[in-house]
Length: 221
Image (cartoon, rainbow, N blue to C red; front, side, top):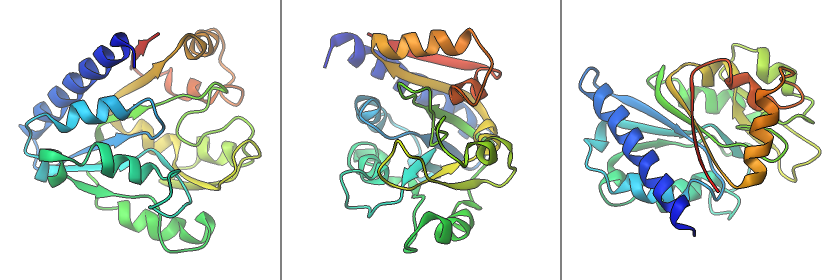
């Protein structure tokens, strides 16, 4: 991994640590919402090394593939292996899956699991795909309109471009945070972000749903 990406991960971990620390001085519990994929792994490792009262921190995901937690495609597995380590192992992790066969059958149960979370979140960390998707808000998803408009916390999502069905927090619920951060790497993602900033059709590039709120952008080549 490039030095620039490692440095970015460490700067992001420091910013998130500071945000959680500040909020913990004012409230009993705090919520951190993270995203999956390969980009956040060095950030997870850097944050796991920070000294916080982790037993007062709740962690959940912006979205999840509806797969077994032992699957290499599971965002929960990624979080457990890279973030919930050393001191951070004391955090409470709320996954976004259940034993139900499909996300449509499981979404109500998962919503109950997440009811106890401390909204507004202290920090929501979003990623972005080359198609402009963030969380599981995909431009080609039939559920995109619902996920952008509903006040329900979670939406079951299927999308032609993705092999697995998914579950995602709605845009409304993800907006309920004190701080929003976009963590991306590579020139291709920077180009997509530039395109998103130059237009306003959210359905074309769903990341635009978060460009209307203050969004800290962490990018490295």
